[in-house]
Image 1: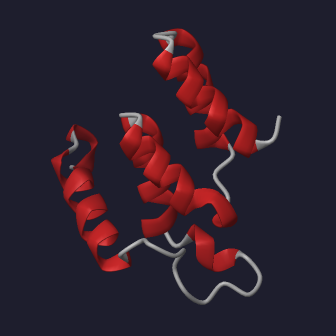
Image 2 (image 1 turned 135 degrees about the vertical axis):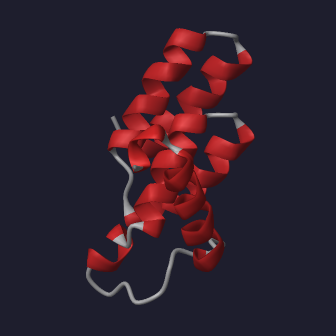
Length: 99
C-alpha cells in the first residue's frame, strides 16, 4: 500500500472514530518512514494526535537517518533540526531506560 494512501486512510479512520484501524495505519506509516515523506508524516502525526508516529518521525530526523539518502545534505523542509534534536534528547533523558 502506498504511504500516501495510508496517510489518507489514517485521517478517515480518525474521523470515523475507528481507533484500532487508525492505530494500524499509524504503525504502517511509522514502519515506512522515508526521507521524501517524513515532514508531511510528522505534520500528519501532530494533526491527528498520533504520538507514536510523531516520536518515530522525530527519531528518524534527529537520528540523522535522512542523511543516508542520496543527495540529502539538508534536513527535510519545514523541520527545525536543532529543535528536534533538543526535544529528542530531552525525551531520551526522561525515559526510564536512559540510565
